[in-house]
Structure formats: structure tokens, C-alpha cells
Amino acid sequence: MRRNSLIFMLAALLGLACTPVSWAQQARQADPEISTGSTAKAGWTAHSHMVAAANPLAVDAGVKMLNQGGSAIDAAIATQMMLTLVEPQSSGIGGGAFILYFDGKKVHAIDGRETAPSKATERLFQDANGVPVARMTGLIGGRSVGAPGVLRALDMAHRQFGKLPWKTLFAPAIAMAENGFPVSHRLNALLNWDVYLKKDPVAAAVFYDANGQAWPVGHILKNPALAATLREIADGGAEVFYTGHIARDIAAKVAAHPSNPGLLTAADIAGYQAKMRDPVCNDYRRWTICGMPPPSSGGVAVAQMLGILEIKDIRPFAPVNGELNAQAVHLFSEAGRLAYADRDRYPADPDFVPLPGRGVAGLLDKTYLAQRAALIGDKSMGQAMPGKPPGMEVAWGMDNAPEWPSTSHLSAVDSSGAGLSMTTTIEDAFGSRQMVDGFLLNNQLTDFSFASSDAEGPIANRVQAGKRPRSTMSPTLVFDKQTRQLMLLIGSPGGPAIINYVAKVLIGTLDWGLNVQQAISLPNLGSRNGPTLLEAGRVQPGLVEALQAKGHTVREVDQNSGLHGIMRMTGKDQPMWFGGADPRREGVARGD
Image 1: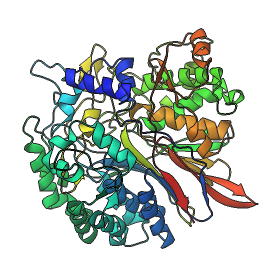
Image 2 (image 1 turned 90 degrees about the horizontal axis):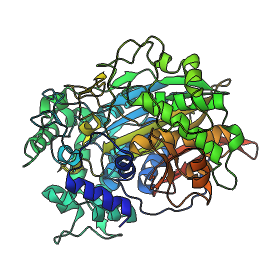
Image 3 (image 1 turned 180 degrees about the vertical axis):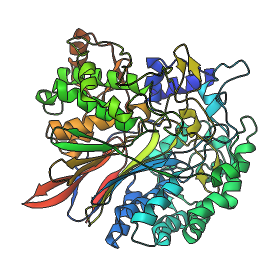
């Protein structure tokens, strides 16, 4: 077992408090869904349509819809249903998602983030004395479960942009849930690693044998309960999930946990609504880059990093033979420190806590970003302070919510030129470790700050009834600024590291001329306003010393990204799609 995993489990057993979040805690949080190896990938090509996602079976389901004339939205629905079955540790219908969709003319941002129960208060994760509880104390059980959002988000998207019947999109996952699929190396490793899932009798009966051993690699795993659930939703629509027995089953499961019951009710689930929001679109050199707005912090933070790196000009410091340049790591990490400092103070659910001053425009104001970029010198600043964007008058406390990266990302383009970037999650590996009707429930409420205020004032991302927790998920679309052609779709799991993962690929493709597979495969790097983190075992000798000479405190840690992207390329004078999948996971890109 890897050292990080042992440290993580020890911390959980000791009841490590979540406040404050040290670099060591962040390092442990960088890889709770453990690394299970790396496989070199060269990328894939297609001319008409393509799907890139974290499991080949899910990709095949999505491509099948595109082959039938379906839209990118149709492909995403089929892919997500299959991921619920074959990658249960990362996402599913018991969780939430952010969707960026380009319909050929306009970008739409669909918010399917989970919401807090109507009875929740800012003391949800505090003890009787108002002290934040240990993270695992809050996570395992019913207390951490929010109202799931992914199905309502996909339903909203399908009603506007779907081409195939809703029922058709569920057929591949239903058939495979009934007939079974071979347990992958990754799923087996995670089942062996996790110590909590088998404590839930329902989950144990699905994923473990009678002796409590995880099903071995290649075992044909069937999930008839999920097949029945998906068939109900396929026949009756998303409303069946939100207003029928499934919602009541979720609420009963949450309330019945023997040691950590939750507050979520069937009425909370029935009342959930997905929201259409304005995407964060900003120019970068000759491109326009669109990301997700709050409650995601990702769209703004990625745009801030790029704005700063445009001023500092990272282009001359491209990798050579896959080896990172020390000056590039320096600039990238310093830009990350500045963006994460703002990210930890300002973004939250905008329906509860609007961004300060001029909102997104203020945080991306070119004069403001120039002031931030001017703070980057030859030596590392170590830790950045949040800035004061134009018009800011309200003081906020610093958020310490430690997001964990058991999430998944998929990208899809269809034959009409429409495209989708979707990041989907149940939060921690296997979520709250509670299973009902064949799927796992999220622990998304632990993405709120456990503390509700500090000396600076109330924390924007504190728990409130009906509120959506802040996220770092960063589905991203890139367009040619002049032609408005869709050029790149990218995103990743990775908890708080997602911003760095996505920014790495954007710099790699747009500034260094790499294809999307080459950029994904680069060593992960960056800072979350703590140490400079380098992917363990992936950097050349001498890089650490070169950064230390620039004043960096360097840590080499596992950085288990799951980047999956598609880019437009020209091959033999014909346009084509080129897909990339993260070598750190088992995904692929396929199309026609």
C-alpha cells in the first residue's frame, strides 16, 4: 500500500481535525482515490464525433448514442449511467455535476451541484462547543449527504438539446448492470483499499464476497438493483427519482445510519432544481476560454491563472522531451498561489453569497490581474494573501473546506459540432459509503467549510439550508476567438488540485504547442497556496533543487488526476478530433 494511503487512513483513525488545513493534509487529500498505476497513451482520432471518459465501457455507451445520431448531451447521459455502474467510487446518480455545453452557437452552464438539507445549519459539522469535527466523523454516514443533482441537470440538458429518446440512453447501462461487467484493476484496488464501504451491508453484498474480500479483477459483477432503478428512470423520467420511492429510500437510508444520521428528507430531494447559469468566458491570447461559474471556483481561478501567466509570459519555458522547465514551474506555482488565495476567500453559492464588488468581472479585471502578477518575482512568495478586487467592500473569512477528488470527467463532441465538458462526482471515494437501490450516495456536504467564521468575518462557503457547497470542478471549453470554432474540451477530477490540472493542459496545448494527450501526460505540478507540489516519480533530477534555489518549499506527492479531453486538429488537410485520456486512470477516447 502506498505511503500516502497509509497516512490518510492513520489520519482518519486518529480523527484529524479539518481546521486548519496544512500542506500535509492537502497532500493526503491529493490522492484519496489511490493511484493504481500509469499506462502510456498515444491519443485517439475521429472525424465525426468522439467521447473521452474514465472507463472504456462508459465511452462505448456514449459513442453508441453518437453513432445513432445522438447529440453530445445524449452521449453524456449514456456515459454517466454506465459510470454509475462501472466506476461507482467516483460518480453516479447519487451525486452531482457541472455541465458546460456548446450548442454550436452559445455556451450553456448547467449547475447540478447538490444542496444542503432544509434543516441544516452552519453548525452541521461542529460539536456542542462549536468546534469543527474531524473530517471522517462528518463524512461517513448520513450527515454528509446532499440532495443529488446530476439527474435533474442531465434532464434539463436533454429537454433542450437531446436528440434521442431519454429511454434509449439508459439501455446500455441497464443491460450491463443485469448481465455484469468484469471488475477492473482500478476498482478492485479501491475496494481493497477502502475500510468503510463494507460496513454498509447493502454495499458489501454488491462489492465483496461472503468473507468480506473484494471481488477479484475479472469477476463479473452484476448489480440488479441498479438495473431496476435505471429502468424506472428510463421509463418515467428523472422525476421518478426525485418524487417517488427512490427519494424516500435515500431519505430513509440517511436518517437510519446508526452512528451518524443525516438531515436530508424526501421533500428536500423533491425540491431540488438544476440551474442554468452564465458561463465564465474570458479571452486568453487568441482564444476564448469558458469555464464554470460559482458555486464552482474553478472557472474563475483557471481564468485568473491564465491572465497572470499571459502577463508573465510562460510560453518560452516549454518542456523539453517531457521534462518540466524550472522557470515554468516557478511561474505556474506562483500564479496558482495567487488564484487559490482568492479562491479560498470569495467563491460560494452565488444565490447565498454573491462575489464581492463587480463579481466575476472584478476578479478577472485586467488591471487587478496585473497587480497580482506584479507580486511574482524571482523568488517564491511562499504563501499569497487574497487580493482586493475592484469594488470589494465586504470582509470574508478564509475557507478551509478540504475537497477530495473522487470525481470523474467526460468530454464529448457530436457530428453537428456541438460539444460538452462535464465533471461529475460523489465527492470522496465511494461517497458517504451508503448504498441504496444499487447506487452510492454522495458526501458532498463536506465540501462546505466546517468552520462558519474566523477573525476576518463569516466564511462565504459555510453551511446554510438549501445552499450548494463550493466546488473546484472545472469543465472547460476553448474557442478560436476569431472563428468561434470549438477547439478544445477538457476537465478533470482531483479535488482542490483540479484547477492546476486543467490549467496545466491549457498552458500545454495553447502556449507550448502540445496535443491534448501530451499535455495530459505531463507531470502534474503547482501550488494550492502552500508548498510547490510535484508529481512523485515523474520529474527529472535537479528540478527540486532548482526550485529550492528560487525559494520554493517542494513536496513530491501522488497527484492522481483524471484528465479527459478532445481537441480539434488537422490531419491530411482534413479536420479531425483528437482525444486524450489520463494515463493515471483507465479511461480512453473513441469515436467515428
